[in-house]
Amino acid sequence: MPMPLECYAQRLLDPFRGVMLTIRFGAAEAVSLDGRRWDIYVANDLLRDGVTARGEVQVSDIRYGSWSVEQGLRRGSITPSDDFRRMEALGAVVYQHLLRVHDQIPFPFADRFELWLLDGEGRPLALLQSAVRAADLRLDHAPRWRIGMRARERFASDALVGLPGCGGNAAGYLEDYVNRRAGIQPAAQWFERGARGRGVALDGMNLAPGLLGRELPSEAFPPLPLADLGHDAPHSALVDDFHAWLAPWLLALGHLDRALRARLEGQARAQALAVQSQHCLYPEIADEATVRATLVEARLRGAQPAAETRHGPLSTFYIELEDGPPDLTPSG
Image 1 (cartoon, rainbow, N blue to C red):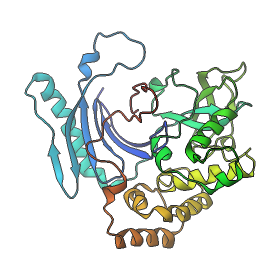
Image 2 (cartoon, rainbow, N blue to C red):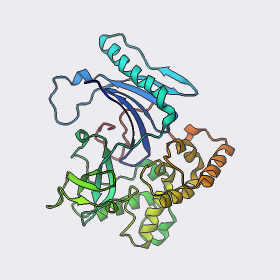
Image 3 (tube, rainbow, N blue to C red):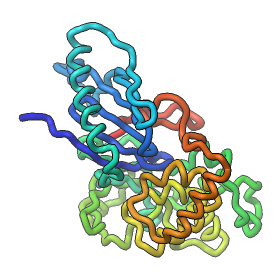
Image 4 (cartoon, helix red, strand yellow):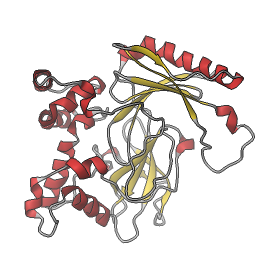
């Protein structure tokens, strides 16, 4: 059976930091975080043959190259060998397809499996991870929400005024608050989301009896990474401020209703350069005038689209280092 060519979007999580576009053909992938610059990698999947192991067997990736409309293709290193020639052919298929579809973005989201940290009553509280394929579901993810290093460095909120004893660190306080709401023995559960948003519960960690196999309506799942219900006024303001800070990246999500999208567009004006770097990924725009004004502001500031995204090649493993060594998990 011939390998399919897949084009899809998926969320970058643990912590949430945007959306990744993927063009996949077998062991070859072209990936982009902004829809402009693409990195192409190929894995030597033959190394998995005959290997018996639990979960995904990881192999090294070879960088086929990077591509953008402005710079064209920049090739990676070439290693003459039979394996490399086969990998080269896979990378060429992805590259040629990229040339055909790069202006057809954003792609539809394919990460229908979601891992949610549950609150003390078993309701989805914070999105921890997502996956495109059932084979990528893992049960060794710690049931703890992480806010991320970037938020620790840059997120601030006036809501701290109403939260005595928080120490003035908005990111650290919010992370601790969310994880406290998960209870003494925090639990996390995978759900398969249907086309209408309904979630069928799968396996998880530290689950109470009766949670397996349940079905939750779409309204039970927060549209943004954190649940925005069930908080008192100061904590609700803190969660809202956090989502406002993430607005330029949240606007790349595909399931936002028009009112929420319009609100995020207004909040994203405070980060014009980030909107400029991300707006190619927005599946729709609720308020054209607001987004247009934000992009004009970015241009007047002499913005470079890469300034608020990344530097250098994008690895096929997307890890944000925290206090301890993270698990190496496939990108999906």
